[in-house]
Image (cartoon, rainbow, N blue to C red; front, side, top):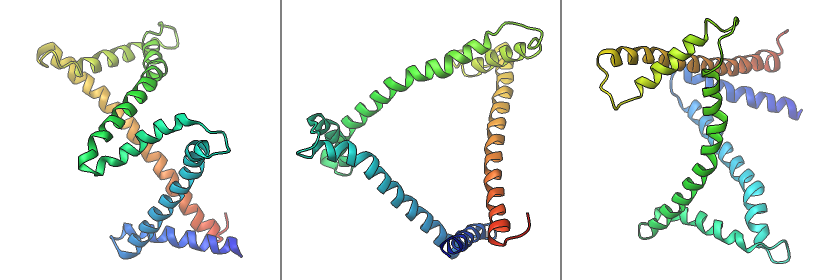
Length: 205
C-alpha cells in the first residue's frame, strides 16, 4: 500500500512539473517549492549528521576523543557567517582568503597532473598508421585555439586568420559539450515518461 501511495505522489509531482510546458502556473510553483524545501531539509540534515556532528561537535564534547584543534576551523567557519554584519565583515574576508588559498593549493596540482599533462601528452602523441589523419587536426586545433586566447598580439593579418580557425574549434567543443548535456537531460525525461507509463499507468512494456 505504501509503495502505491508513493508512486501516485511521485506521478502527481511529475505531472505538476510538466505543467510548466503549458505555462507558469500555481501548481508548478507548489511542486517547485516542495522540491526545494525537501532538498534543503535533506541537505541540511545530511550535512549535520555526516559533517558537523562527527567533525565538530563530537571532537569538542568532553569525555569523547577531544580535539582542541577543531576550534580553529570552527572559528573561521563562523567568521564566514559574519559577512552579514557590516562592522565585522572583514573577518569573513580573512576566512574566505584562507579557504580559497587552501583550495587552490590542493586543486592546482591535481589539475596539472590530471588535466594539463594528459592533454599535452595526447597533443604530442606520435604519428601512427591509425592516427595519422587525426593527430595533425589535434595539433592544428590546439595551436589555433591558443592563438585565439593570446591577447598580447592584435588579431589582424595571419594572427587574425589563425584565431578565426581557433574559434571554429572552440565552437565545436562547446557544441559537443552542449550535445552531451542535452543527451543527459533527454535521458532523464525518458526515465520520467517510462515511470508514468509503466509504473503509474501499468501499461504493457
